[in-house]
Amino acid sequence: MKEITVCIVDDVSELRQALEEIVSSADGYKCIGTMSNVSEALTRIPLLKPDVVLMDINLGETESGIDCVRELKPITPAT
Image (cartoon, rainbow, N blue to C red; front, top):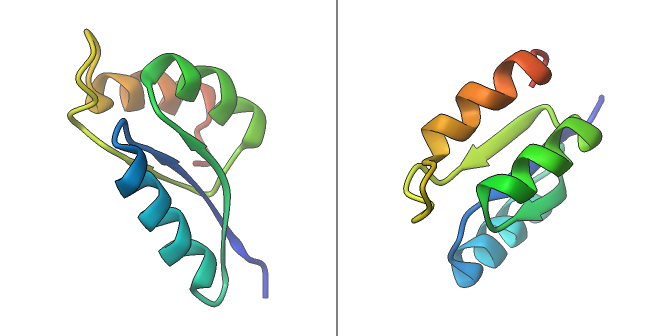
């Protein structure tokens, strides 16, 4: 069975770390990257090509997590 790869985008480091631990400890899932902001996500997620992205919608920047997903979807349609 193929592992489901996951990236996590959240600006709160404690939450990001907790989610990474939860994903990594779940059978069949592998966290392949964590990011703290939109620009990092837009750079790294297309390179990592995860199956799933857990996105914080309130990243506290000029762009929200929703805006980030809108930009990522055309670039990484399989995610």
